[in-house]
Amino acid sequence: MMLELLIGLPIVAAAVAFLCPSDRLRPWLLPAAGLAHLGTLGASAYAGQPAAPRVWLGFDALGTLLLGIVSLLFLLCGLYAPRYLALRAERPNRIFCTCYLLFLAAASVVLLSRHLGLLWVAVEALTLVTAPLVYFNRNSRSIAATWNYLMISSVGIALALLGSLFLAYSAHIGGSGTSLLFDDLALNAGGFAKPWLRAAFVLLLLGYGTKMGLAPLHTWKPEAYGEAPGIVGAILAGGVTSCAFAALLRVYRVINIAGEGPFARKLLVFMGLLSMAWAAAFMVRQRDFKKLLAYSSIEHMGILVLGIGIGGAGVWGAILHAINNGLTKGAMFLTAGNIHRAYGAKTTGEVRGALRRVPVSAGVFLAAFFAITGSPPFGPFVSQFTVLNAAIGGGHGRAAAVFLILLGIVFFGMGATVLSILQGTPSVEAEATSFRDEVANVAPAIAAILIVLVLGIWIPDPLGDLIDQAAAGLEVRP
Image 1 (cartoon, rainbow, N blue to C red):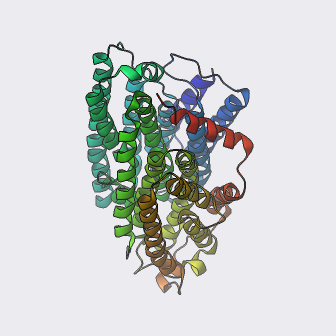
Image 2 (cartoon, rainbow, N blue to C red; image 1 turned 90 degrees about the vertical axis):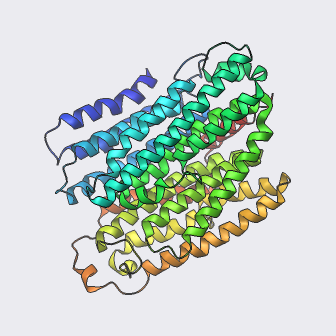
């Protein structure tokens, strides 16, 4: 019953949003659906829903954990939405609200999926329902960004489909039957045909890595994040990427059990460091602060797969970092959207003195900058330090050294842009705009960054237990 509610609630809310005639009332469906979804998930977790075998949809530690973060992020964005959409009254919001709610339904299917084929379909659905959100501003740049998002994502999803077929064929050659349930794939993985299995993982890594934004198939991110509203960037950076990361982890577990873990981990370490290096290179002297956040997302997707590739405690750190990154990016994109609205611009040449113009939004944005770059006492410091410590302790000294160097480059490169827009005196044109900090448009971002701060000081036992269980499930050896 809980599974049906988690998927059905946002679908019903989306139908109501589409049929609702009022642009003023429709946005309130987002926080209502978000609260109901998070409450349902919390009740399921508290009741200890069992992970039933041989089902297409089911609860497990990894799915529950990441769905909880996506649901919480959706609720925070939903609370932000009514005031934001009221300020954008010139834009009809029927399609926006409908697709925003369908995102939550698609994300729920992705994170609860226990079937390889269903997982692929849900990830594709996630792409289709988020594309109209990128186009919300309806100008030439946003439509170009939307098409770029769709085209690159289509390449990725095609690679993921081919990888899924290779994985199924590997199982077929190995005499393991035709079941694509992850439980069955894991049970019979020892007999899979190894060449086809390796090819499958490469294709799936590239496919779902495209949705995450791993280099080199990351090129949709700067344009999509740069042109989409901040409320959309938040769910792309914290929600869509978490779903793609979960999809990759589902496949990695099967590969690991099949005895090809060393091969997979080498690729993950390489892709992780490549993504971090690529992002660092473009973050230095970046003038567009929304594109800066896109490259920051590419960097942190690299950290996630690097932690999995390192293994051991690195897996634990990577899962924790998915939580920290999702919430911190939510705070950054919501406040970046506020700064953009206050200035009507998003480049360092036009945005100055944000701490004077919108002090609360700028203050949260500054705190989120320190958080996302791994500064204590915020949560990302703990997760990044865990990955670094695992790399050193696991004999990955060179990877650890490169990791530290890239973190330093990112800190100084990102810091130059952030400080440039926060310091100084606002222009006369910026002072003349009507946008101001209000409780409705800053409270969700404050809540997100406070949670990240708490996670840097204290990890609640139920959360720690879920991370332990998820990490243990990924580290299963043949």
